[in-house]
Length: 415
Image (cartoon, rainbow, N blue to C red; front, side, top):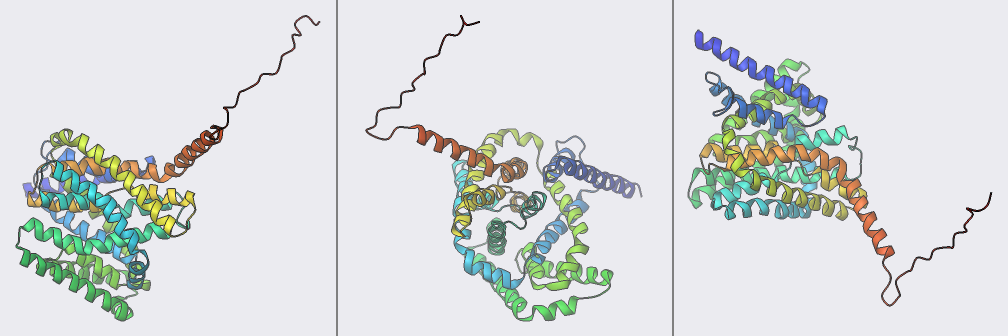
């Protein structure tokens, strides 16, 4: 009975604290993710108030949080949208991967962490935060802008890449052989392809089966189906998050909209618990030694994301202003970077990887909304200064312009 009371007190304090932090972030108009991570650091080992009784429950809640994050993301898109994006925007996806995954991999190798950690850190720096970016687009009133479909296409391609990347990471972290890893990847690709085929061909049938006018029944069916598929996917050595993402893709129309509205509060609750859980497993004293590499990586990958968005928007025929807005909006990293790093932390692959990823995400989740707002005006200001400087410079062969002063009459004697 005593341990039960301690559990309720601890978990209640966590939820209440997260609610207050979320309210504070809303007033300051930025993402609450960094505050949730800081709360996890405060409650974890080496923090101000380490948890005891509720840590196991928080771990389960964190896993549900990842599943709901991916499910809700899948609900945002239809299978036909995904197929269309793959056909038209795949070059932008390849550029995105090359520019943003390579810096993470290179840093891991320079630090001597080995190839597995390099693949993990490549994923951390590659994937933008869909949740943070969606909120920023809404807050800035840019959902109807011409560059917004380009931004969303890149995010969709990153999410699809996760369906391939996560099984690879899972196999690498488990230390399985090349043959076993190939089988795992083949299963993941086969399941993803099958779900996409079924969603395109029979999406309406699935949606009618799940559909219900009663919100309670709809919530139970969608949530139960998601957890069931996620569990089966994990049993087949495929990421549970990928299974949840594919369930979201399979649902469409009014069912997807209704499920989104019902599950949004649950998603927010368990996602917050997930960020706290990640912070719990990071010792605050381990962050200062990696803060300089994290800052350097944040600067480099912020610039590469801006370049990615600019190139993709230019390819789509967007004006220069829209290109800079697209690039600045993509800078934020968040939930997916933490998900990837969390897998490595759980596997014990590299002690400094978790602290570096935490510091990296803390920097870019704060800087991301600022780059989304100010990249365009700063870039145009710099371009204007460059143009003015070029106009003032004399052409080759011409003598430099000499400023002549008009004589000034001395009227001091006039009365």
